[in-house]
Length: 406
Image (cartoon, helix red, strand yellow):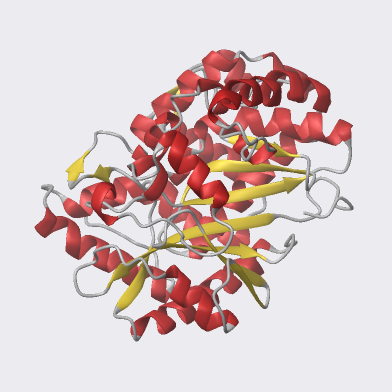
């Protein structure tokens, strides 16, 4: 993200997808073959027009991202859909397809995980040595990251406050992971549940997922960077992980590219849904950013309160109840108790989002993807999961909404 970009001048979008076998939807660790075919040689990243394709920690995951900040999110949705169709076509010869959603519902990470083996993989090996990267929280999670730029220190403080405030209710529109180990977890967003615990050995890396309130980049360094660098040092004698990206909160400051990266959004069934969510989130963040009194109010809300609200949304998604008065006041609602779905609906009504009206209507009317998946699967089992996730793969390839019966 170029340092010449001020707040909301562009958006960096990253979406991760899993590669699975077409016949039985088992994990297919062949992301390197996709990147090799696109670039002409084994590579960690290849630029393909408006998007870049890259590897991730696990060999069965490929990431698509805007090739620099994008100003038009509706156009970006078309670019992502075109890339998905192209990659799916490339995978045909390997008997594989892309699978959307935030987790594979029956993957066994202990036996199915292969880490990226090419190039300079010293960072991956360091993570694996310290934390062990074959658990669900490392090798079975796909998300969309939204990178929001800031132009200077003052913009950083305002943007961080606004992003921090909106994080707790993100699962209420983006949860897509109710199943794990071929069972219903009882959570709408089990990806975030596993994400929150995958580095429990060093708690300061993740914190409470909701980042601490800060009043300057220096304050951020004191509260976030310094504790985690100190705590990981005994496990990382060569300093391999002593960088900003070690931070695993739900939104992280990337001063190396003057952006804040939001990490709490599950991958959806089609890029149009992902980008609709990104558009809505960025509009609400901008509304808070543009009001100095709201920035102050956002920073005054305790991190534990926001973390508790996040947990409710991880469990119940759109059905979570929001009744924290200070929080509702911050978001400009008069009600003192309402569902997270109704809260998001009110926030969306205040914005001009005509380009994303249809995908947002699916979420508001039929529920999050987690809710729709649970409704479609019914009685849990491999025989009921597989056809539903096969249909999900078709939605991704064709750019269709996933809908379930009543």
